Length: 59
Image (tube, rainbow, N blue to C red; front, side, top):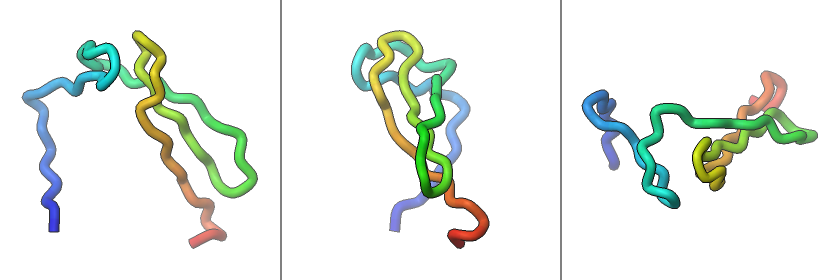
């Protein structure tokens, strides 16, 4: 099992341009099932991840 730990003494870094990420940009992606968001670095605009938020009817 992997433990999750909140850290407020560090600032995440973009894995591409290596800038500190005080802000993470996102954009909603058009999707038929639920809401999807693309997260990206506001400096170099490299995609960092995608999340999927299910609707209430999807469980």
